[in-house]
Length: 316
Image 1 (cartoon, rainbow, N blue to C red):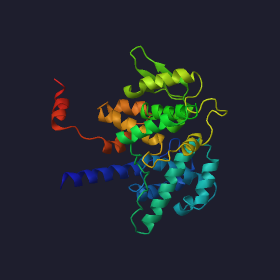
Image 2: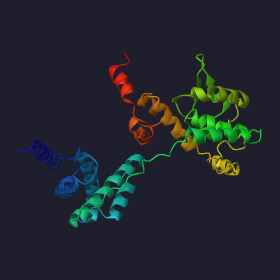
Image 3: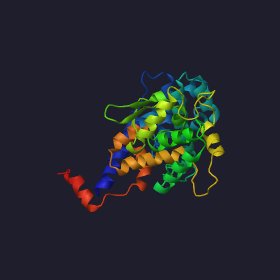
Image 4: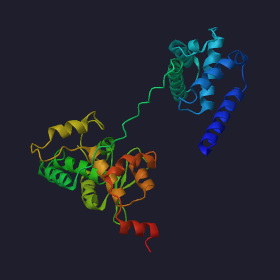
């Protein structure tokens, strides 16, 4: 018997034991009436539903006991009917976050059970697109810098264009953060580095050295006003950045359109190319985990052999 087959058998046995031994905490009288049906449903869908089996058991049991109290037939098809699920969730008294989770679990159970009954493989789950916007090339970024400086020398012209470039390419801010940033959010440190106190975020962002001097100068001009489109009447007007970009787009087809997402991608990729630790990059970018950086690595070249040897050796 192969090790893989042995482990498969062990896992199947453990899963079966979890299902057979399950009993809700302080189980109400209704539990015994629906227990076999709940276990049957969970056993049928456990391998198709991507939630821990204990979670699936708890959620399906709660639904079945609610249906029993309502006098509905003891039939999994009735329990998993959309009207039954909706009635249960509305009357459950759960917190909104828990309602969302329970609804998701029950939707997956319903879908898996239907497909199992038809003798078909479960439909593949659609996943969110994990691709990221490509960063600008050095040439494109240079053209954008020249374009920004050729706009009218006003706060809503050249100054606002530079603010977007500096905050996006230099600091990796998101579009909303670029719009919200004020001059007082930019802090010059004793070391000469320039930090950004990102609005509504505790993360540490240090401007890239190429852009830090310009950002400090722009911040001193803006003061406590916004860096991008100062003196505006609304702090975060809807589509402010998009509308401004369309109005000021260059007529020269060689100049790419200004896109904060591409600027931010370039900032992240630049840090990764410079071998800044991934956990530090993720934290500075406001990402939930290092895993969120994975899509950006396609723009990060692998180190050459000599560099790889130095890194693995420890830079002796």
